[in-house]
Image (cartoon, rainbow, N blue to C red; front, side):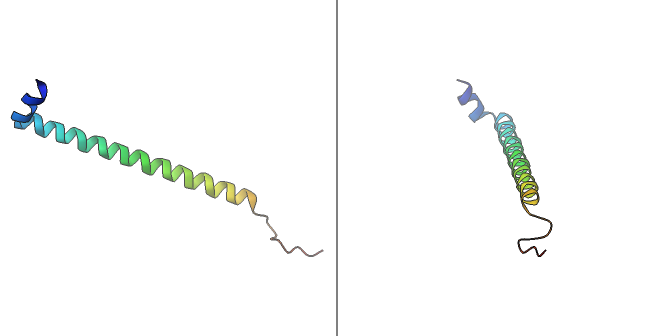
Length: 59
């Protein structure tokens, strides 16, 4: 019954659209945050795995 009421009430429909928009924005922000963390961790592990002198050391 609430779905029928929501479909006929324009303010409720607008509120629902705003809710979905806000939810999508939060999900996108969480995705970008997770992606940035992965990139940062990848860069840190890459820095740890590289040597200071390179592969061709001469003694």
